[in-house]
Amino acid sequence: ALVACLMGIILLVAHKGMWTSHINRMGILYGLGAGFFSALYSLFGKRALARYQPATVLFYALLFGSLFFLLWGTATGSLQTKFTPRTWFWLFVLAAGPGLTGYFLYTLGLQHVEASRAGVVATVEVLAAVLGAYLFFDERLSPRQALGGALVLSGAIGIQWEAIKLKKKGGEVPA
Image (cartoon, rainbow, N blue to C red; front, side, top):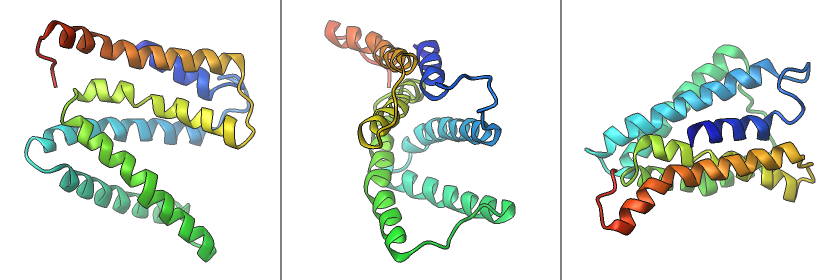
């Protein structure tokens, strides 16, 4: 399931060719960093949920993530703050609405699912982003990306297959 998701993600995001001059090295670096810190959130969040409420875990994760982002953006000169009031409004709406809601639901889910399983299932988020770009921003969807999406879905379903079988037999599903 993990290999299917990984290959699917590569096909979804590297549709112009993985090893061409179109590759954005900083984009790859930031993507790997995001994946690394997301994995850390899943692992440490799972441990923290054994002791604290989901809202508390999420609050501290977002607090320290924001501080890291502020320090990184200041140190690299990449922090952008000169937006119009309308842009600030929409940034706030996106952060407070789907951003906060998504992380809160993910944190709630970590209480009931293994961190590794949750991480694999969360790769569906990349597929949703690609489909959203196709549907709402007139992006193209290549056959290679469609194959990647199918691989991501099959991996996300495959990782849950064992839990589904155990639940049907009345067995205990590992959390």
